[in-house]
Length: 204
Image (tube, rainbow, N blue to C red; front, side):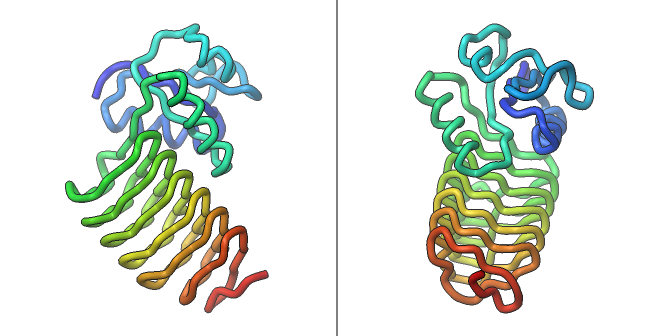
């Protein structure tokens, strides 16, 4: 890949995404952010989200790097409606099966593994050293945090969040906007908009 990538969101996650983009072969990164100006790491913040939509800078692709799942998904959908060139981004040190599906606006970071039959929707994050095993289904806006692991056939609902170092047993259903706490071990279904923590994971 070559060219200039526009990233909406210049915070810490944005810098990780930018670093991933450069490693993946993008020539340069431009940040757009409503709350930051100047620079973010070695890259320039050149405008706001509105500037991104107005096309005040030339770029060849765009991705959203906002940590908040519903916000990231809404921003990605807004870019898609405007016909901006959404891309998916896979770090060269991630392992993604050629028989997996990765949706637009999705980012797979260093050390992550996506196995055969997995299907990742739009605006998903599979973070550093996380794994998504065979036949998992990750709906739009899901975040699998660093070091979290999903066994085969897990279904994660829209904008759900799997916390740092969590583990999810095979075949489990995680509802829309559910949160799995850091280090939790999920052995039964998690209802929508529920937070679970602990070993085994229980609602709080």
